Length: 85
Image 1 (cartoon, helix red, strand yellow):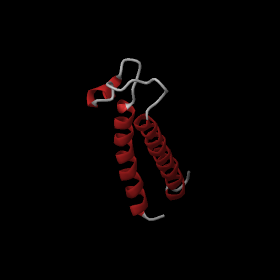
Image 2 (tube, rainbow, N blue to C red):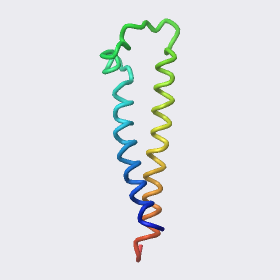
Image 3 (tube, rainbow, N blue to C red):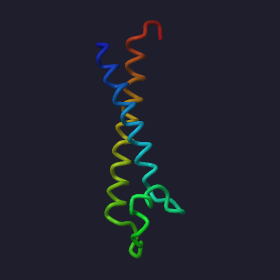
């Protein structure tokens, strides 16, 4: 496989790692978390999660899937490109 494929996967992995960290920190925990710093603590949860919280969950899962695919892709690329493994 070409070397640009590995560089693309590595850069995508770094980008999704940072984005996944930020998305996880934005989730509301028991104490409100960092999401309360941005106005998320003002809303009351009478009927469960808000639309914004559900969208945050979806984005987090999507970025997590892309992150996982990058890990698998890099592992497969190393297996193919490194001789003797």
